[in-house]
Image 1 (cartoon, rainbow, N blue to C red):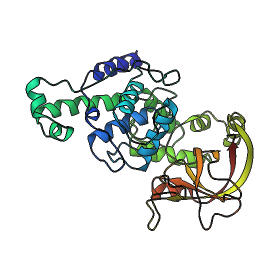
Image 2 (tube, rainbow, N blue to C red):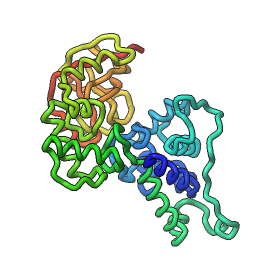
Image 3 (cartoon, one colour):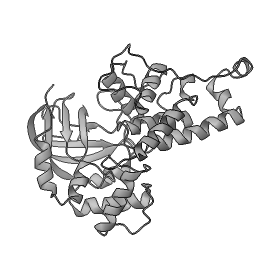
Image 4 (tube, one colour):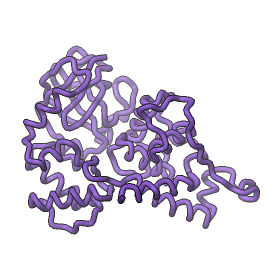
Amino acid sequence: MRRVFWTLILIFAVSVSSLCSAAALKYGDRGEAVKEIQTYLIAQNLLHVTANGVYGSATVNAIKDFQSALGLEVDGVCGNETYRILRAAAFDEIDINTFRLGDYVPNYELELDNEQTNKIENVTEFKNSGETIGSVLSAFSTVKEVAQYAGVGDVIKLGMQGDGVVELQNRLIEHGFYDGEVSGVCDSSTIDALKDFQKSRGLTADGICGKRTYSAFDGESYEEFYEDSSSNIPGCSRIVRVEATAYSSMQPGLSAYTATGTLCRYGVIATDPNFIPLGTRVYIPGYGYAVAEDTGGAIVGNKIDVAFDTVGECYEFGRQWIDLYILED
């Protein structure tokens, strides 16, 4: 019933006019409209950072992934078509697994009367229009809250809330890692406790409660779950043992672009092309899927560099030996 209740609220919120439909959003843009699409990307498990309103490399990468999966032009720009489909997917109005271009997608435009239309020519003026924008932003807060709802067993990240977070907090209490309020809100104290638990079980302390963390809560060892999950990676052609380090474009002196001209972002690795050719798709346990798009002076032989969006994540990753799953083309 709780899930149904949230779904009804979500459907109600869909009728609210959108800030995004007025203009395309691209790398470098900032504001509430960017925060809105980031929320939708998080709901689709495509964006792995908080919705901060900054259209950075992580957002570009997530938009590209979404566009690629849906057969759209892959440019990393959230134009009207990308936005409409992304919004509909976030509100469960389309099934992205079966969606095909040309299928019906609801079109949410700003519904303004003639007088307002004459006064408001673009989204910038609309944002300065006082009470009107206030009501839209209020409704957007509701949409954001619903889009970040977590049920029991869902992947849980910072900022999410719901029954799944209540369950997570209770399990952290049971294991002696959390002594805060069972609020159902995944705040920084919950994330800190989750990271401590993950470290204690030999997991990557990324602060994201996914399948491996749930497995650890249920008493399975990391090795048992690792062996079970690795055998089910689709398209794996071979496994190589590599020494992995981490880097970020936010580090001083590093470029925002890779050796192949793409944005340096989460989901990219630097390799020795003689060992792992550029363009090779891989799977990294605890990190996810990635593509070899970069190189480095110290990256020789079986060494790789794994890209993150923040320097803090690089320090957490450190230097480690990992099994790298090479995927078929």
